[in-house]
Length: 294
Image 1 (cartoon, helix red, strand yellow):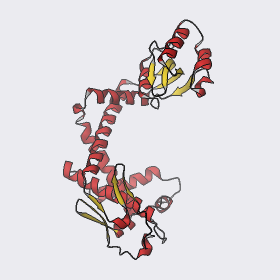
Image 2 (cartoon, rainbow, N blue to C red):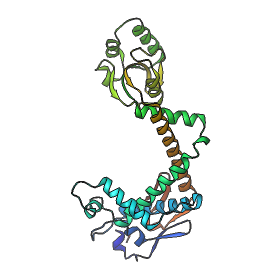
Image 3 (cartoon, rainbow, N blue to C red):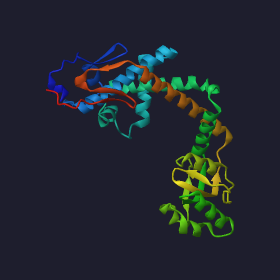
């Protein structure tokens, strides 16, 4: 138990690019209600504190992006207003999540950085490769499309070719799916996967659902990590082109932000004092100390 160790609140827990993070800095993020902070919880919030310092510094150094206390307070108010339950006070909102006003302010600052940098990256989407644009567009289109899909899943290409020939030759798709499909969930429903966004499907499957002729058995086999699929799209409501374009750009900007985020995390010089844990950059976290602190 860290609080039982007699650690002074001014003691340094970690150094990030020559910026010290003290015990008090970490404790300010946690709503303890007077209870002792266990080492796992302390390490978790120390990890947050490290990320806050890295991204705050990197945003200002790389892009000149920083925010005033007033701007941060306004964003914090907006966040609470968006998330608070009816009749819930701000204090109750924070207590329910075991966080403090300091933590909320840090998250609000990170939210502002996120928004500002995504806007910057939107201006640079022309630098994306054709492959990145294509994947972002397919992902955006899938998120905005609704389709009703049936499939037959078999383990080998030979099985798939034989099965495709059967349904193309006039055999009932649902009956064949029930007989041979290796997907027990949809096989019990004549191959039907239901209706919804194709986004959760494996990328090759998803991409075919977006372009397949509605009401016709797709003439080409689709291979995924699960096997070979024969696909039938029975209904599809396509997204508006302007919505797809806007979402594609957002996806590209988000991908560039994520890339910058992890590059900044990896590039940071982080030293965690041993008694508080070990820093891990990917995924960014502090691994709690394994020995009991005396």
